[in-house]
Length: 387
Image 1 (cartoon, rainbow, N blue to C red):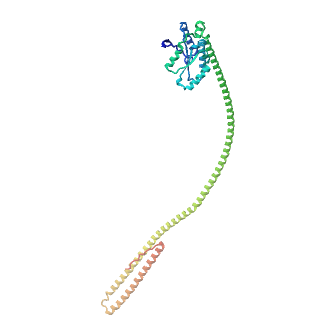
Image 2 (image 1 turned 90 degrees about the vertical axis):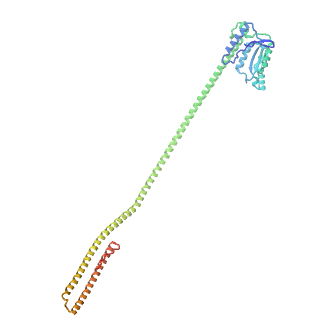
Image 3 (image 1 turned 120 degrees about the vertical axis):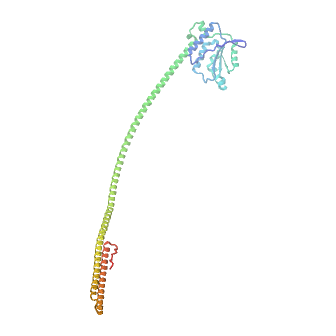
């Protein structure tokens, strides 16, 4: 309840009651609080000049809760007090004018029509102080009155549940409960139907899955059989290819062996030739040494022969001198004869020396030719110098 204030020289007190759409308290609790407050005022002989019912024009439609609340409000006031009732629509500043006016027409023609027909008035509040004061001025000239619920509780001593408002609220709550039950049953039925449909769908899906499984299993078995057959064919082809490769390898190895044989023969012949050449070289060297030994021996003998000839010549000259000494007293004719004899002997000795020298030369020539022929190379024989 507000503090008293003056409007056009009259004292005004406003009682703000809780609404039935309170989210913290139920409708029965709200009605009990309003009834107790109004009954206390009525017992103190404080009467009302008017009642204001506020409704938001921004509400798109009047839902079931709002309709039930207005019906309880009507029973709370009573038809005899509708002339003291103002139905005020607010929040016009939050809605477009044409939309608000259309909703206002709908409300006056349908939902608020019983109260308006009983003398209630419908007015707009634009949110300003002047608009609020104008609304209060419409109630200042009214006579005081009492509400139906005040008379029922105080004068008739009725329990709240048996008052018109209480019965309306009980009926509304019963209808609401019935509606909830119907809605719940509908939801349950709908849910049950959904469950049945879901079970049917699941069963159908299971059957389809079974059919697909059988079909897929058959397809897979066929595919596996085909793959196994293809695999066997592939393995057979691989084995054939392996056999061909083995044969090719054998043929290649055979060809390589056949190709390697001439090479081995050539290498063996080359080794034999090299060994023969080495043997020839060694034999030639040995023969060369032997021939050199023979040549050296022959040279020694030739030198010895030359020495013997030289000694013989020296001996002949000595004998001639020894023979010449005893005959120094011989005659000139005898000396000449002896000189001629001596000259003849020297000539013969000279011829013998020439024959020996030619013999030595031919011997050396023959030895050199033999050595050259044997060693296949030039050999310069050593010719002893004649003394």
